[in-house]
Length: 468
Image (cartoon, rainbow, N blue to C red):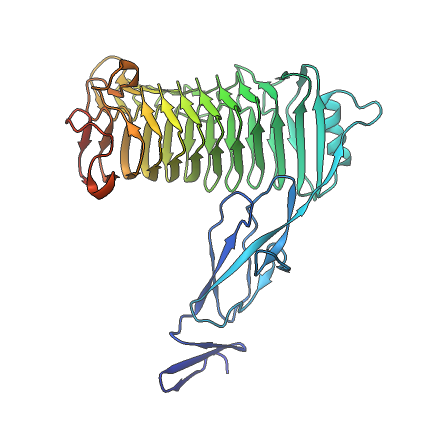
């Protein structure tokens, strides 16, 4: 009796193709996905009773492990393979089913085959012979040069490639235009103790992580010296992080000296471009510095451009000395958010970034639109500047420019009266040296009080917004 309803006192029972529901009847239930030790981001999926629907594709990752399926408990066992069709996973009307990612250790092989000596040769060997569920380690002990390389395509999946600098920090150069590495779906690229240098006349980011791929930079690894000057929008001078992909920087890893530059329209993310639902985490002294986003119309996100992704700085991470420069507009000298979430915590700093536009400069440190910025712990925003490149125009928010949600429960944003001068955030000839709220809300400090924020009008300006 598909779709039949029976009323039995206060209890309502609904039958959908053999599934009997009880309670406050709602024809849908929710499946929530948990990383269970992994990293990344996945939203829940909604399923209709009585109908088959595919589980969402796994978007989590875990170093040295591969995803084996979903379990109903953190400790397993696996009940559902990735993307399998399911039906009526719960009898609770409007309920939630929690699924936990399960992880299996990858097989490991050091690439040391006869006659396979250079980095390029070893990468090519993996392209020809690499197998699913393997971690391949390539040891680099001299300076090398390679052409653009794709890792990998075809039916293989869950492959990790580790490039390990041994006996020093060596340099890997790029011999032709294009991305040095394109990281494909379910592939993880791990870079340890190496410097990767790009090309000043390039048309692509130095590293491109496509949807479902993963990038890790550890130790003293650096991505530097690349200019992405592609088309009407140049996205990511150093690293491009695609939708549903992840990028983690740890332990003194650096993205510096890169440019997203175009004379056609927009330069976005001089250091890193984070696309829809991607995740970018900086921790343990990781740094994004001295990158430029330059556009004939707008330079956006000199250090980091976040387009509806999740960006987190923690454990002494730094975004400093980046620049957004634009013909009419410069937005977010350090970080620009168009959707998504940005969290600063654990002694992270955002310092000495600059937005310079001919007519409009918004957010020397951070520009927020349709997004949420959370500032916690002993974090610092200092020494940032929003200014014009001559002429008359609009300058707003030396430290932070907000058009959605800014929540500050700890840390310091310095105003124009800070001492010494190197700590001052400045909106040159404009308003809101520390914070400018155009719309949305700004909540900082306990009980609505200002927390380590100067309260003079030149430092905090709220227009069409709410101070909570």
